[in-house]
Length: 425
Image (tube, rainbow, N blue to C red):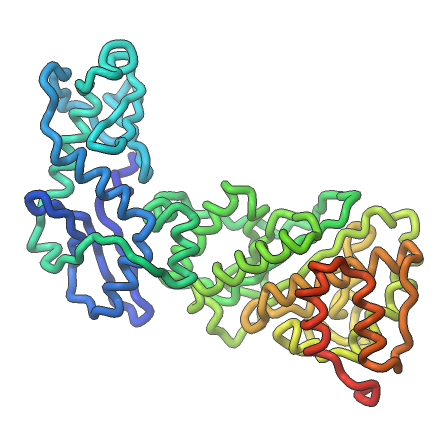
């Protein structure tokens, strides 16, 4: 049985190991947030920022709690208990059947049971399930000055930081924490096939312990339910595992959305990224349409990859330079460790150089979009590669022809910033 956590108590641990427990409480007609310890003004504001999405729900509950049982309502059944809950609905059971109660605006409530649907809908009266929930919530929200001696006002927040805004977009802190933990599966090598330009992302989490990890696995669960995350898998190289985004169309709109999603996710649990362990942000570029030319792809694309390696400061784009996990093309190591890995053909070419700790996910995905445009244009014979010794202006001009006007506005400044002179070999 799952207790009613969606509107009762919430607990978390701060970065310095202090446990904070919170519970909404009703003092007369005033709704406040009971806290187990004194909070500094900065921490108190941060708590309210993360609860921004939930505050309207609390006030909806307040109206329900202040309501008296309407005349003509059903008799109360004390055998009913809470079976499952989320911020917008509660499921009650008597052991044999289950019915869902939803709390609406203005103190109103509705239930899925036949008594309410057939007799009480629109009359303002309550069935036994609504009455049971009303009694339970009044008990839950009763002030407890011993366990929660401090209070915060549950009030609207005008501006919130990006990490709190991210939680708000996911439905609110109570919504996120009511989700089950995302299960971490084994690494899957199977790949779907696509005939259109498509990107896939692997985002490694270096740290894997503490309160932030508890929050992360619930956020991943929400993102999986929304179709944004394909899987969450074990990875021997990092403690926190690897998040695989659901493959998405290689467009500027989708790249910007996915890049911001990864930035928000990292900012939310940034303590997991304070680690000496390397952690990658790998991008797969779909190459399935060229599978009939499998033996040629490496030879055709290699000059372009070498040109990028020679003429651009890759660390400025990817957040780290060439290393033992993503080596230069000419390095005497297995090709799967090259910074551009061709070993996953015929499905994809993997860009391995991105760093999940220090790289900007938006920049990394913009560069992957540029490389996708170049890969396909070269394979289709639509692009003639400039000389490695060409001037910077000629390189940028040639590469700009691969991009739409909107793509140029994002990608060309990125290329100019990382451009090296031809003498830099």
